Every structure is written in C-alpha cells, then in structure tokens.
Length: 66
Image (tube, rainbow, N blue to C red; front, side, top):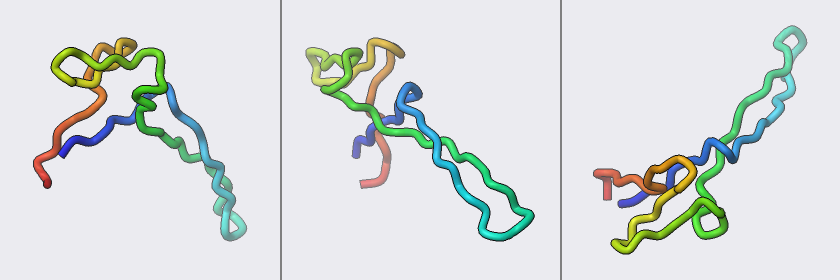
C-alpha cells in the first residue's frame, strides 16, 4: 500500500483555547499531504514514480500493511 507524504511547505496552525482557567491557550502545528498534480514541483517519472523536484524525493512511501 502506498501512502502520500506530508509536505513541509504546506503547514498551518490551529489555535486551541483553554477549557479551564489556568491552563492557557496553545498552538498546534498542522501538516497537509502533498498536492501532487496541482503542485509545480511535482513530476511523474517514466517508471510511474511520483517525484518532488523541490525536495528531490519520492512523494509516496510504501507500507507493509495491506
């Protein structure tokens, strides 16, 4: 099974408000998966491998689970 990697360029933040007094608010970083065909750095090679030219790495990785 192939899974799509998260792109470090597509980050955001989610602000979480405190539930009780004294905890304080905090910010959680969020990551989004690669846009693949919609990204200018995306290339599909001759052998069908999906590739990111920006990071010079494959966009997908294989997992052992089916």
